[in-house]
Length: 224
Image (cartoon, rainbow, N blue to C red; front, side):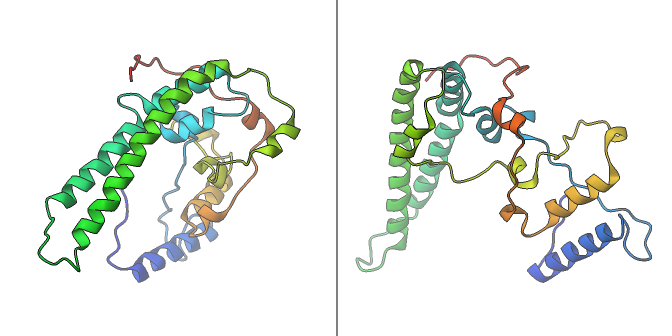
């Protein structure tokens, strides 16, 4: 169950107590209650989630796989159309509160303007992705010479959660007998640390070169 704290101070205190219990091997000093170890599943555990699709979209993915991922994102029930509808709903919420009585101060209208602009931009992105998805088939399967990549900047700015906390994140369905208590303690400490989001680890070569495309659950076809 998620913990709720009425103030930041109490939340920080609870986190400190959690880390103290971890430092004592799973118990607080003078207590027999073990802490709750947090296990973070790898994104490949849910290959159709956005983190799962990012994990699948490696440099060695085939054009067919990339086109399928873009279709998953941009399809009728994909993440991007849902995000667009979310922004449109937020703009419509603001629209219901518009007034024009004061021509010099109208924060509701300014907010609506920004949300409406974000909605239009997301719809433009959907159109661009639809065109790009059709063009992916013309891309070669093999990788080009790395010297050509220097001409174009890399755009990715964020790593999936498993890259941040390390590749030893344990899936929830792993048998308890196969888990190492000391590894569990280290994983829980990383998960509860306020600096967990700033720690970066380098994924193994095998994980970087092999997209988890095998064994994917069947997916019903989608149309734009």
